[in-house]
Image (cartoon, helix red, strand yellow):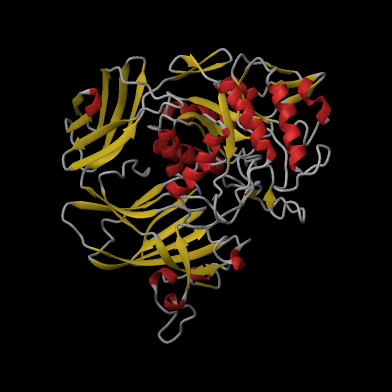
Length: 571
């Protein structure tokens, strides 16, 4: 099942903390014998035979959850493979209650056992999932075992080659969540002109005509709705809420009740459309003053998670003068999206269809669609999210076009209220740059990654490069920039110095001002981030140095260059 959206109002038990862990590069925890799997394994907590034990959970190393293993133990810095986790916890069974284990995310493939019984498997490193444990949980002590494998493979999403660190482990919160027997599984709500429309989906024993209550107290709205035989209650009614807008993030309490279940959420109401080359929020044109960011922790090594990290990263974006962030190249923590909702920052949300996926493999498409579905279901009620992005820098082919068209169709089925985009690449044509990627026909907004003045084109010529496109659609320049080592001031001609990076930004800004169909940009990138591809000693040292802020929080000169232009646009 798709992980339920609503945790507010439910009984929840955090399983965060120190977990026992065993690194397992040879998959020994499955107890194989001459290649044949045995019924026992490390999840059974039993020796191979009485008196023979080759592991000991009581003496196993400790790792923090949530957290990636790469940044917690120097021996695991480059490790890719399986790591086993164990946590014992107490629970008291309550009559009429169901129990679920909820995972914010775990990278990449997760298998879970509770009290020796397998409870579920999940593939995908950045989206939430839940396993029901009503039948396997018991009163008293329970033992939860996880096998998490971050091995890269060609059929995966993303596949074997990326430009970010492959952090492994349970990188977001794990919680035990209790619900009534029939509960509100998910809901969707949006504003269409002057009508609020949506649905509420129940899960559990269902019968046609079950009563569902929807309340928005600040709007004086209280609706009683009846579900159909599938447990779906649909609604549509007139309302005139104050609109959520960038910089003015009006949010309303939405309360839902059905039987014994009562949940709530904070929701904003706004519209998002396009008109020619313009993006319209609440029917008003908006220029997206953005920045891209990876989910890299701001104040420590490793993957970012939680509200504090979100506040720091998005706080830097606000300081930069942004009204928009591109959350690359995968779904970021829910805490980040919710904080953007509260700050009034528009969001580009992305799935990791990155570079060259196995386009002709049905399993790969199924995995991409699953991650898209889990992302949309989690964030469908966040007003901040205006764009679902379906890919990044993927090379042209007929198979790739069919793959992305399938994602376009699935995204529109799941959520027709938002715009679709992808980070494309332009072609060099005589005299300039041209965007005519075939998938552009099916998107609402074009994204484009370009590094003029860094990877190609003489820097002196960048400001005068003309841009054209086949499509009458808005363009977001989704990546641009240059690398620099913080503190290496240097001069404008020497690469990897702050002055050179600042000059690249000045020339890029001069070019941006001349693109008539430009609706915004999200330069690459807010903060330096770990990447195994970036090996230049003394300069990169496994960091992509294109950040406007260093991994230690130092702002580079280009930060002020971009900030001054954004403030000029805002004024």
